[in-house]
Image (cartoon, one colour):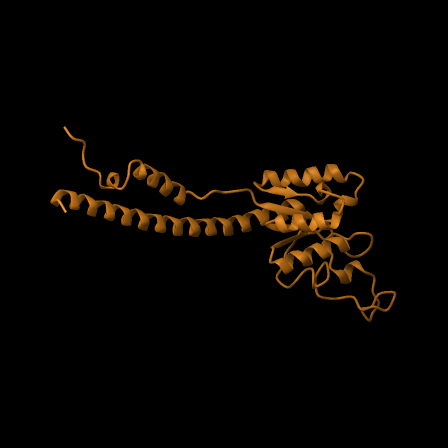
Length: 223
């Protein structure tokens, strides 16, 4: 007794199975860990390596991968940090006061570089006070050197904390927010990509099956 006819088998030996496997892979998105660059003055701490391991562990616990600037490769620290930012899906930046009233200037540069690249930035600080409360000012709103202090209800300069931005109180909160927001965006993108691939593959399968069916008809009628 002959086996039941399968139109897909007419295409070529083994092609049907490969197409089925290809279809399954097309509709199953491959998820990779989100990479978070950990910007901040932690690299200057006496326990910089230990603190870095803690921050990286927080990223791992949240399902991501932490990129800590103390782990730079090569002798050019600046280029290595920039390369790590290029690899990152987002920046988690510590803008706590550093050696004064304001944040670490190196971190400010990294935030600007990430913004220019279109890389999302998530901020945190251990000092929630706004600048006008953090810096001693006179009745005219100026500091001891006569410089005007911004009274914009922000813990850092407007260029660092734009309107609508949240400054989280801890790295844990900033990392959690980054993973939640980016994870949602990535899932949507992967779903759209896998759907497009599945549609294209389904169209290809239909075309090949139609060609195979035509070849079978030609055989049956003797053309």
